[in-house]
Image 1 (cartoon, rainbow, N blue to C red):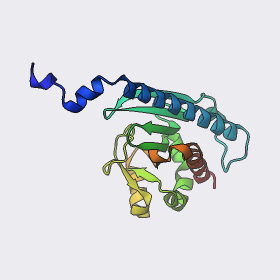
Image 2: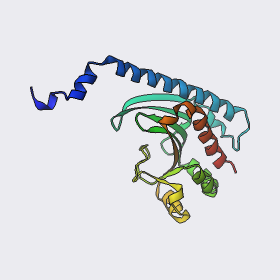
Image 3: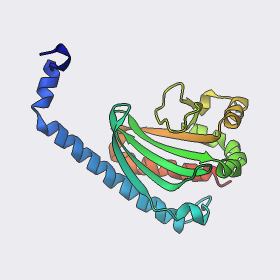
Amino acid sequence: MSAKIQLSTEELTLVQNAQWLLTKNNIIVKVFELFGDIAHDIRDRLAGKPLPVRPATELLQPAPKISKGENYLGLPYVMLDYPRVFGKDDVFAVRTMFWWGHYFSVTLHLKGQYKARYKTILLHNLPLLAQHDFYLCISKDEWRHEFAGDNYKQLTQMDFPTIEKTWQANEFCKLSAKISLAQWNQSKELLCALYEMIFTSLGH
């Protein structure tokens, strides 16, 4: 047999063990349940309870969407998009992502009219976002999600002129924060807090 298709000792152990894959599937189910709870809470807050900013009606019309995949850089992931407006030229979205083996993240994604609408207020509130460990996307690819050094840079490590230059250079703006998977049992509260921080930064 070709060496390319022979299994290592570790691979032989895994291929004979169905339980680890069943456990993985069960974890993904729990992520869906977690994101469903978060979507329900955030939707209620945006629709009724007072927040620093209430999004325009068109931003609240699309229902929350939860999707999954098996291969973001080789690993499973789950995404919650809400609010979510993805147009060719205009984007307003808050995306929560679970990435196997890495972290949870929450990202504000703005493009077109929404980027222009919220630019001034977001730039004003950068110190607030920096205090809560938010990162700014510095790459040209708006669909990359990993916190790699060539994709995201922590706001605390950037000066205002560099941030403003980055904002101007890209058609889009993404501001993201992450939570360790070790904080799973507190993840709902922590992720909802990041949501509220995003809306706080849009509202003053």
